[in-house]
Amino acid sequence: MTAVREGLTVGLHDPVTDPEPADWEALRARAGLRANWAWPVMRAGVLSGADPVLLAVLSDVEGPVGLVAASVVAPRRSAAGASAPGFPRVGYLHVQAPQSSAVPGFWFASPAVQERASLVRAFRRAARRTLGPGVRGALWRQLGEGDDAWLPWPRYTRDTEPLAVLDAPESVDAWLAGLGQKRRASVRRTQRLVAADPDLQVRTGRVGEVVTPAELAHLTRLNFAKHAAGSVELRSGPRSEVWQASVAGRADVCIVAYRDAAGRLLGAATILDDPVWPVWLSWGALPVEDGGRRHLYFDLFRRLVERVVDRGARGMILGKGMSELKSDLGAHLVPQHGAVTA
Image 1 (cartoon, rainbow, N blue to C red):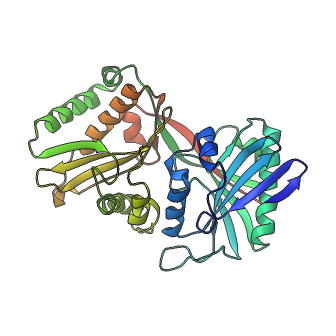
Image 2 (image 1 turned 180 degrees about the vertical axis):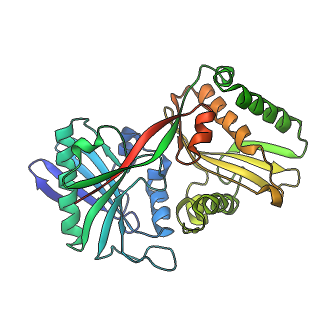
Image 3 (image 1 turned 30 degrees about the vertical axis):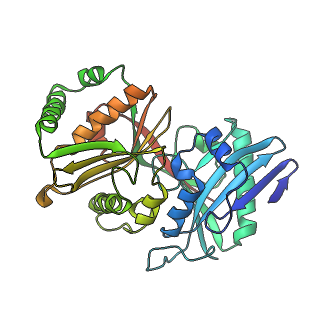
């Protein structure tokens, strides 16, 4: 714990080597952070990821007022794809949420620009003291409107891929009515095809109940490899069996799984549950040429809408990627950008 100004302290933690901070679950609930921020889940993500993570808890005399999660990225990563023990002596900070590109890697209790700017300065000073002068600069991801106001100077910003967000409709029928005529007809046709397919089973439940960690990791790797063109380490984060095992049995992680009559997993989606804004974390499916189905993505989307309506959530965060298709299915796109700061 480092005191950086009167009444404000910054506690720096390594999720791999440090024990879970006191009252972490209460803080996670207060900040609205989902299962990917649970301490054992973060630890699994770091252990199977390419970079170590520095977690900062900023507190004043009344308690925690801010959180920042930052990967400490070395210029050259290990060929093995997993992070080495400890922090690199040379590199930069990559502020991002654990295993998710859909939500920020920071939380501040106050919306006030000056207070947030003060907390960011405190975080950077504490990180420099701990990591040394060789870790220079920070890359901030998932920044929205107004976030530039509290970032330190100098900074360089650029637009990044937008975030797809589905606002909860009044009903599934209301959602369908808002789609274009061709898309609405396509979704309804898909629903009939799934319902009439005797060789298709759909189950919703937890990891370890409706799908094994190994099965889920395999399909998630297929999806990442498809969209990353092989540029993403396939053993890291939610692509790893270690990470999937860390969320097994958790009530706040939901799986929608599609199987054929022989029990082969054809497709699976992972949802980080939240009563207000659940996050669609990942989707993976067997290619059609390997026995997969063409229409599962659209059936899943309808089920996501149904889930939001049934649970009374405000909507669902659908993540990045395939923006045009998600927009065509009723989502709106929220502009996002990233920034590099000193």
